[in-house]
Length: 76
Image (cartoon, helix red, strand yellow):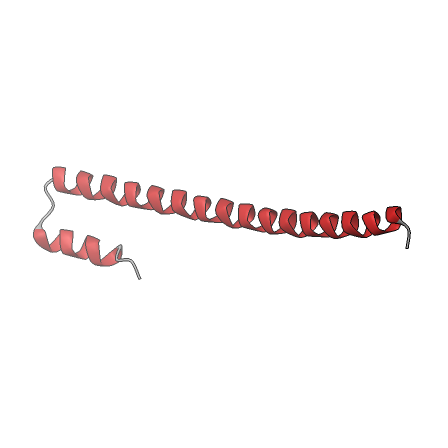
């Protein structure tokens, strides 16, 4: 086997490794994006809950109504 052929084998191996690493990186970036989207959704939900709760408290809600509100918005 010529020297150039041996070097080509090494180049091909390294290219395959790089391709696999880039694919793994892409998958992890997709997962990160999904998690960020989920986190933003949860933050928005929490803010909405706090805003509604604050509005109800300021408008003079009874304890019973507050308990019902919290039970309706309980996280599973």
